[in-house]
Image (tube, rainbow, N blue to C red; front, side, top):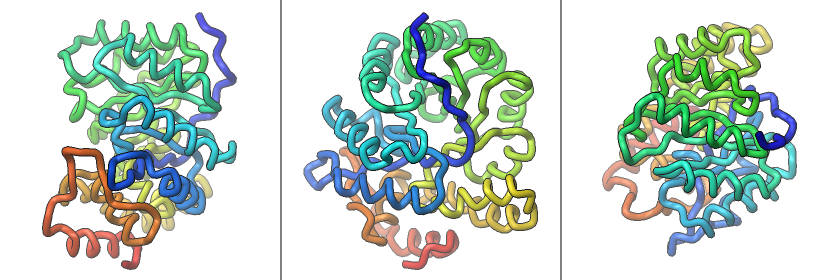
Length: 300
């Protein structure tokens, strides 16, 4: 087993950041620096680069490297940084993990291979193959809407025993599944992180250590305020913020979520609206997005 860097305490709210692009679809380094600062000013406790909202499947290796290096340089160690890794096979995923190891990243967030159908034995083998050799901690990523395959609670229980696997991001949106993850990992040094901000407060109450949220790129203060109020024992305040955060998943009703978040950031002058082709913001959604942003407390 590889010698792993010191484990991070995976807790708090992390934005699954957008990856700003220029109009010719190169990484917009200045825009990415702006997004990092926007999130840090919103009080985030960590950052994820190249998650699903960061459009990782559409990024070339050079684009990935640009995004990783730029984000890490801008964060400057203020908060932990997780790098999203995911390919249709284990060896290809390992190449991304090895690239992340060479940087100052604190951990990797590893998606299930998303092309061939997999059983739970294959999922276990995939993650153990990575965790055994990775020099930085590994976080599991359950997002069956995208990968076609869920990580069963029993599989999470097995994988949580590995010393180099520190947690899981659960983006399936099923609260019963989240509860089962919490049950099977209870008592372990393992963080269950919520992937849907609408479940944030309920998840924290049941023992989740935090959340990794797509919409946190656009509304970091809303997401962090729920967590911070809960941790300070101010449940009434947490409920008020949670009601606002529960609007965030509505982004998907306007089309491709990264395009929605980038459009919202563009309206605030943070970064441009370009997403990786062939995706684009659906036409006729601009006024609806502005009205939705106002519900989040973002005046545009």
